[in-house]
Length: 93
Image (cartoon, rainbow, N blue to C red):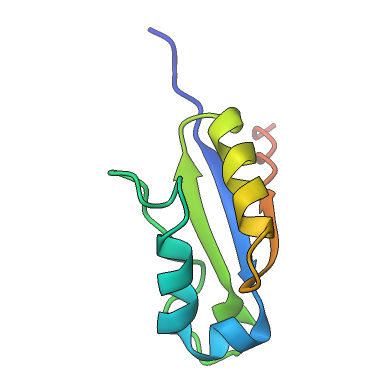
């Protein structure tokens, strides 16, 4: 059995979009790739009082091709300052 690789995309909202999280998130939810069943946009630090930390979100996708296509769409949005594939961690040892 082949293990499926999950690709994590990290999204950084602009300061303005993060101030009104509901507006920034609603803009993102319309993006093709984020509005698919099973794709969940998750805050990296839910409940944080830190304005900087509240700007970061993540989404997990099943392949790098979908992740790169999503990043391309996200980077065209005014509400998104940055979007990138989170590097995989090193194996222990």
